[in-house]
Amino acid sequence: METQQALVFLHGAGGSARSWSALLEHLGSYPAFAIDLPGHGQRPDTLPAEVTVSDYARVVWDIVNNELQIRRPIIAGHSMGGAIALTLALEHGSELSGLILIGTGARLRVRADLLEAARTASPEALQALATWSLVPTSSESQRAQFQRELARGSASLYRDLLACHTFDCMARLGEISLPTLIVVGAEDQMTPIKYSQYLHDHIAGSTLQIIPAAGHALMQERPEELARVIAAWLAAAPSTPSPGSCYNTASGFPHEQ
Image (cartoon, rainbow, N blue to C red; front, side):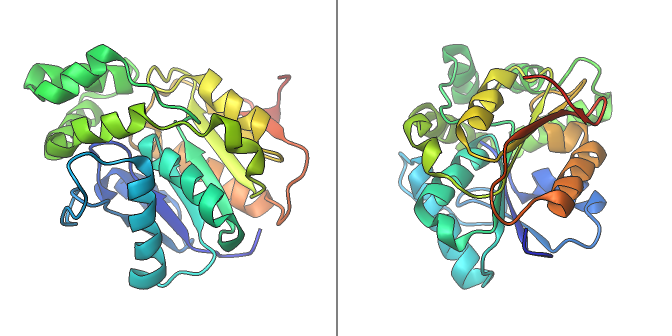
């Protein structure tokens, strides 16, 4: 891995750059940038009413190259952000240094009840979304913060989930040759472990790490642990793919697949 390459963090559906705040506090000296997608956080909406993951990827690539002027970044994405990261890896792989995929998948079909909850964006629906995204042991403050984040992004959440629903790059994963870290919460209900396992099985040289007692919103539930996983991978990742490895962070040692 090229040392001290900038990390660019892409949030998930209905989120914003603020989703990464707790994680960034724990990343230390690594140069890292969390960006708002169009229509999220502080960035104006420049995309059509019906948007695709590829639309977001085109905008992100423009932001990285022209606004941030970063060369050969490591792209890190959570959930829908992971789908955007995969799209960038397929379209611009030779111009990236690595890939970090957090709670995501090569295909992101969205449950009908989740789509309906996002469409209504009622307080009850947002509470249900928080329940699906966090483990039961999450603190009240974590749950409240997550619901506030959802409320801020409620206008874009439904559109984002529709974009996720049409995303599918399963047949193209073999084209990715970047050093790749895949991280998933052991109790993720939105993008369960099998999604990450599929990514790991089909991206050569990838590393899979499973964080115990964590759900979908890893960067908010377990920011310190996620930062440790990322930092360890950055320190160890080769510049070219090697045989894949799988770690469970409960032990820190490889386990049988």
